[in-house]
Image (cartoon, rainbow, N blue to C red; front, side):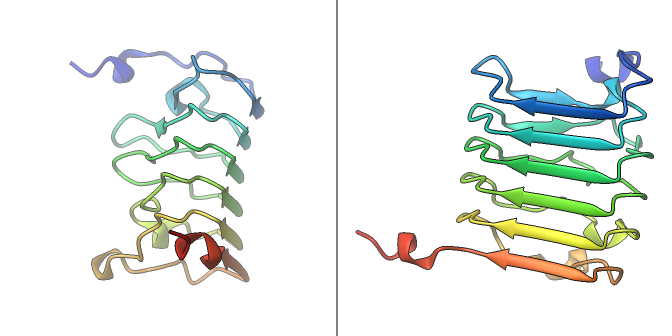
Length: 150
């Protein structure tokens, strides 16, 4: 039995959540607890590893997602990031992240997407379809100097 599917929403009215420098006990965040969240910022949480959500559920109200300076972050929800209203998506300095969320093309409202210094990031698999056509700003940057040091 999947325990996360039995969790009731903990903070239904919450619309903005900022998690800054939370320490070693903060390793994952179950988005089922915050069904009406519009803005989520996770910053400077070096032990944070994963976002999760129950299968089939979506982040209906999420418009802004920032994950930054989370050195242990490795995983988005297994079924992809289903967020039909997501406009801005920022992933910076996540040193262990290898893959973007599955089904990125389903983020039909996404206008602004940024990935900075995620050195293990893999290219999009061909069968995933790439990026949404709604993008008006795309910023990808990686410091190649670090990859050539011995």
